[in-house]
Image (cartoon, rainbow, N blue to C red; front, top):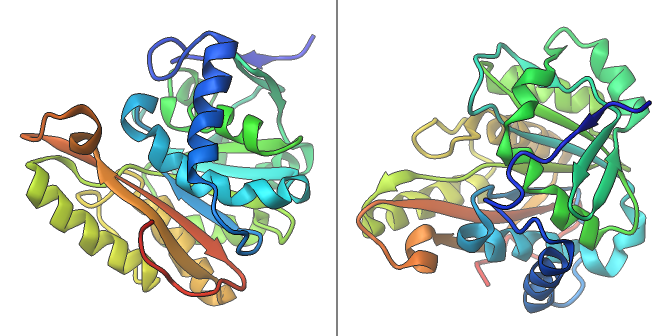
Length: 270
């Protein structure tokens, strides 16, 4: 019998009703679709409740739509919010469940990850983690079929993350790094901070610190490898919870970025 990770935040971060969830995600993707600009190698997307960051995440995911059949393997990295963890960790499960169905773990990526000293098994670190889970419905709607290796990122540094990426991030693997940006700052202060962070991402200039992004280690590792590989980033969206929910005394920032092997230009926010 397969080992299954049940959804932890369906009904809170996003709808637990399959039809409602599908309609909502599809609407955001349709709204965000633009002209085809190549096949992304990596994305940076936020992981808040969909009412706050769903439209921002869709701005990155929509770039996969035109060539959706060409991405069938996903390496998914995000911060570990609730457990003390050294390095990176995968769950000891076979399937990840969402209201839209099950996603199978990528057997080849998992086999290779288990051989890396920076990576360990921790089902507990994944059980209540929302950051990776909220990416799955977007991937389920934008890709035709795919397998995934989810890795939560604990206490580590950019070089360790970069080493893991070099070992696992093949040309046929889509890398998705999830991170929110600044946390609990006044709206204008957060806007300035997040624009500064976005400028560093576009310049492939790491490392970031935890004050600029909760997934700083994963983003910094991505920036290091992207620079080595000659990838070019594009900024697709940059907003905050203050743009979505109205309250602006303490906001959380959200950014969506796409990394292409052959992008037209570094670009600006749409």
